Image (tube, rainbow, N blue to C red):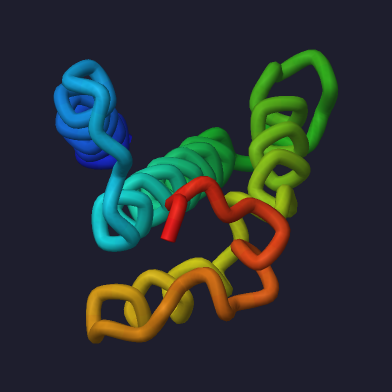
Length: 113
């Protein structure tokens, strides 16, 4: 979970530096933000599942608290901006493909180009 959190803060910090100077994020910079969010969500999901496993037979009961954590992180990870398909989209962007052509970003093009 810490690696996911660190990557999100790093990507957001870099993006903030760019937009704070009035510049627009490049497609690669936007891809890094998508990747950081996806990685963080998947890291949190994995951590919750590991804790659930470690909790043994008490984990599935609502009184344990782990049941709700696992349910919530699985629900959050289903959101479109956190799905595993983002890895493919980000890979395409890092390889020079136009992210705006992907179904995910064709609805959200703020790149100005």
